[in-house]
Each structure stands twice: as C-alpha cells, then as structure tokens.
Amino acid sequence: MPLTEVLAVQDLTVELGGLPVLRRIDLRVGQGETVALMGGNGSGKSTLVRALLRLIPAERGTIRLFGTPLADFRDWSRIGYVPQRSTVTQSAATVREVVAAGRLARRMPFVPKRAADRQAVAEALNAVGMADRAGSELSRLSGGQQQRVLIARALASEADLLVLDEPTAGVDLAHQRILAGLIEGLVGAGRSALIVLHEVGPLRELIDRATVLQEGRVIHDGPLGELSELRLGRHEHEGAVTDDRWLEGTVER
Image (cartoon, rainbow, N blue to C red; front, side):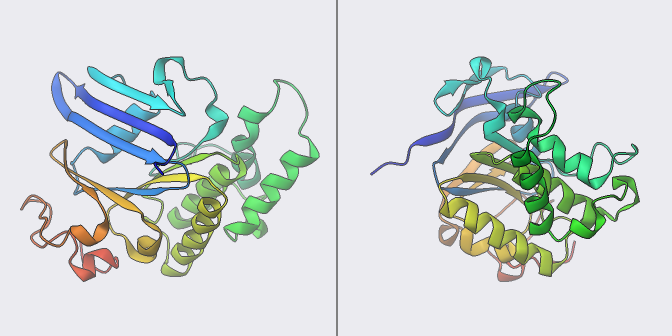
C-alpha cells in the first residue's frame, strides 16, 4: 500500500541571484519514512531545504506539505527543523530557552507554559544528554553541543515531520548513535524524517530511501543499496557514493 505523502515536491526550480541552483527537482517523503537528501558540497541540498520551508521562493514547481500547497500551509507545529548551525549563538539565550522555542507553535500567544510544555522540553534535553547544561548560554557551548540543543528543540516540538540539515556535523560518534536511536523511535511512532547528510554513518540502517543531488539535479532516488555505481562530480568526490568509508562517515575531508 502506498505511503501517505507527508512531503511532495514536483518539478521544482529555484534561482539565486538570477542563476539556477535547483533544476526540476522531484522529492517525496511518506508517513513513517526516513529519506536522506545527499550530495556533495554545492549540490543544492540546503537550498532545497530552505525552499521546502518557504524561506526562499521557487521559480516554478509545486511543494505540498501534508497534502496542502506550501503557499496555503499554516500548521508549522507539524514541522521540526534543525538547521546546519545555530542562528542564536551570539545571543544570551540559555539552552532551556532555545529548546522551549520548539513549543511556541503549540502555544497561544502570551499564555504561560503548560505542564505539557515543560515536560516536552525536559524530555528533549534528557534525550540529547544536555539536561545538565539547561541553564548555560548557547553561545558558550561547543559546536557539537549546540547542534544537540537544536535537535532537542525539534524533538520538543513533537512534530510529524523532522527536517534535519546535516544533524551529525560536529557531533561525536556516540551522540550520532544516540540521534539514530531517537529518530528510530520517532519514525516507529509514525513520524517522518528528511535528513540532509554528507556522510551516512550510524544513520545508515534507518534510511528507507536516498535522494542524491548533483549540480542542482536529482541523479538518484531509491535505496542506498542501489548507489554503488553512482558517482558525484569529480570536484566533490572521486569515489562512488557508496564507498564504505564515505557511508560510514570516515572519509577524510
């Protein structure tokens, strides 16, 4: 039986500064599915994510979230987004405050936090191993710790679709495995995930499909096991996409 589509992209073209960055992209994520968005540096992965979240406009094509055209979509509490790096690292926001921001879409304006909000924040902090730093300023944490806080913010939102832009970047192997366990539990509960990855590492067993971009175009959409003959551009990687070192996150860059 076909999966209910959580995210559907068709014929998407995005230009930046008058130059095409994404060219006629098709992408889909079904309910309970984990899809990896892969490709070398400059392939268009992060641009695609920004377009999906309506942070940048598209020149053509359609995007639907939970069956609703992107222009009409309002239920952003259903989306949990983890960017590549923090945008609040220069502020005095504490770890707890940043994670609590994941609950804002579920609260009425000016209404104090409910017990459910506080519990969701506490559980998210515990899940990523940052409960002991809840009162620390985000700007004083390492890059890997900041990334774990942003993941906790997405977890606290209790979103139906997690969009994670290179969530393992700067995170040690032990916490990559913790992240893999968290995603496995969420997907097992019927949530979906779109994960931008440069290296698969411990997330490999979770991935149902991989969509691979090269120079703004989709060059593969299917199981990881079908990637053995696929090659990225020479300026990005000389080996096959499924070189074992690359998939396990051990390629030197």
